[in-house]
Image (cartoon, rainbow, N blue to C red; front, side, top):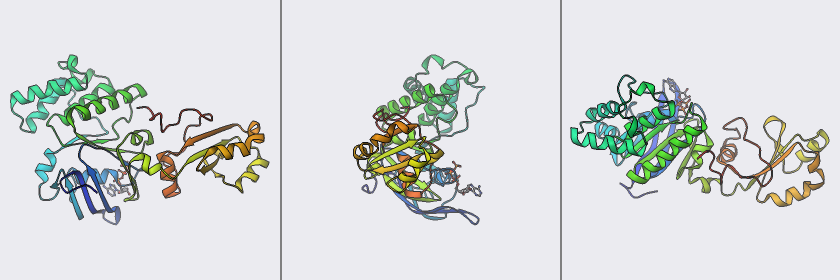
Length: 324
Ligand SMILES: Nc1ncnc2c1ncn2[C@@H]1O[C@H](COP(=O)(O)OP(=O)(O)OP(=O)(O)O)[C@@H](O)[C@H]1O
């Protein structure tokens, strides 16, 4: 836990219910300032509810919640100024120019004209949209719109930028660009990031991950720490029936799409043991455990249907950092 005041988010036993539906069942966590923090969990885990409480869009029903040391209940106005928000759904005014979108946002936050204009140039520089500042927002590509939304989110110098599934609907290239601008933004401004996502690849790059499910934080830590102890994941595809029956008695369990999966500290001995049978298999992979495995280990369920299969020794999604 961080020192008091050293946290950008502090939650203690936060609870929220929509009528009979318990959306958050006592969430406790602390996120140090300047961190990239990811809330990772499936649909319905409670991520949006937590973000709505943080951004004061929903009233706290139980527990304590602070943003940059400010209580969301007692200091709601100051909390809102300390936050920038980038929602999954596009929220630009498409009739305004790129610059006007930023200017308008700065006005709402009471920024004086000169500071507003200087800040707009600064944030447009970070997301490389300076040349587009007089273009109507409508004509921008999806990726550029998302970059403008990020620039707008930090226009008023918030302590914390909240990103709700920020790369949904973007192609791989635009996703990479968005993450590279977010990295620059952190480096240049020191803003903390809160990402809500169900995409493993996005959470793998975070400093701190909270694995959430059914309104509870199941694990909280750096990705490497969460993975530590899970070792390697060996996946076999296209296993003939006789071999399948034999292997299911050993370290292997049934995985997705007819695969067999084993979690072992070291893949070497297991692969040597399988050696004579390897040519009979459709495919074999050995990868360090991912956050997907962490989720599976904690809940017994997969966060997504299937993980990509790569050959033995190929780059893992862990050290490759997905699409980042
Ligand atoms: N307005 C609402 N009324 C009733 N129940 C709700 C409402 N909003 C959310 N819930 C329920 O609260 C729980 C948590 O939902 P929440 O939207 O916070 O999860 P999430 O992790 O953000 O998932 P998603 O990515 O699907 O939004 C779910 O069971 C959901 O069905």
